[in-house]
Length: 140
Length: 140
DNA sequence: ACTTGATCTAGACCTCGCTCTAGATCGTAG
DNA sequence: CTACGATCTAGAGCGAGGTCTAGATCAAGT
Image (cartoon, rainbow over all chains, first blue to last red; front, top):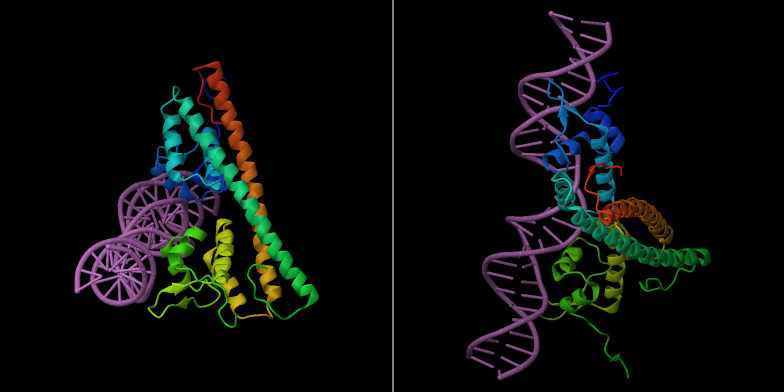
């Protein structure tokens, strides 16, 4: 037990695709675009080997993307992290700003949801009564 | 008081843009794409005049778009409405399916939000203590 | 009549975020 | 050794959803 850590779990691009939900194409694309924190290791033959840290970062990327963060912001965040300690305040600002946007998004969606639900109700009631006249009034 | 209804409120495209938040370009685009329920009236000179029903429909469109409904679905919905009564069941299905997607979206966003909030907390605490070592661990 | 600003049409163009292709190479199983 | 699937690079292509341009016309103020 000297240098050989029991399985440092290096994953192929295909395996990472499975665990992150990103396609292998997207993974290569993200790398090209500078969205990763560090350079991905390679085998002697040139194949990518991802560490679990790489995967963790990608999982965070997935969450941020799902919640609507543009790739440009993600790239900015990755750059901050890449440049190491000293810019945590900016990272915090970036993330917190995004969190606020997510909050706003949730609120907007909830408003939409209630408008839609109300309209669903209108149709449901209409169908229940089987009234065939006087539609269309878009407001009711 | 015979035929002259007191101001049927016909609006120009610019006014409609203001009240819906859509650009005039987008309004013309939506029309071309068949997203409107009826043909928009025109002045003798060829300028569009929107009724308040048109505006109400557009406001609904805006909500549906905001909540992620693709233009194709919106078009489908518009077609159903255009073809008049008799297909309310399908309209209901369409809207209700969308409502379910919105619910799922809200839930997903809430999960993202909590992941982000947690990470914000990590940075905030880190900054509060002013510890400069041992970052980066993407999981913590 | 003249100027100014809003609107008109048709169609080119743009950004975003991937996705796909071609053609070569790697690596493992038989 | 041979196959075969996974991966490699560089770069083209795509779908969604508008946005913008050019050049003409309309309408209102002076």
